[in-house]
Image 1 (cartoon, rainbow, N blue to C red):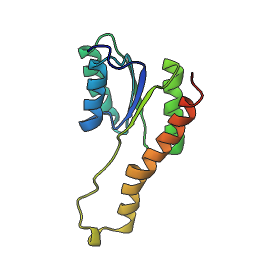
Image 2 (cartoon, helix red, strand yellow):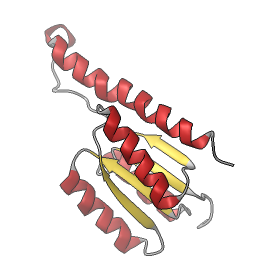
Image 3 (tube, rainbow, N blue to C red):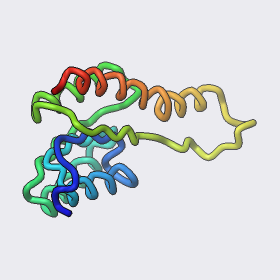
Length: 137
């Protein structure tokens, strides 16, 4: 099963949780190049170092990125393409659950922050990723 997946993957929210588990699964099943992005740089670097040790044949690129920042999204995806030559798989996983407040008590600013990450962040990444993927053969 080591060759079930092929190519280059770009994963956001990759320092922990589902993003980290996705990166491990992709490496286990054949992805050879992982561009892994997260806003938490220390956790990303530690997580990615573990990946490099566990899967010596997999290239891992660390990308510190905030999905709320269009310029960071654009430059991170461009950096991944420069490093690996293409983009085949995208997992837009970065997200937040917020502070756990009840909806009727949630300040609008916190709602906007959550939507900015969970919805707009996915859209920003998709827009850039699809722009790259549609130009590839």
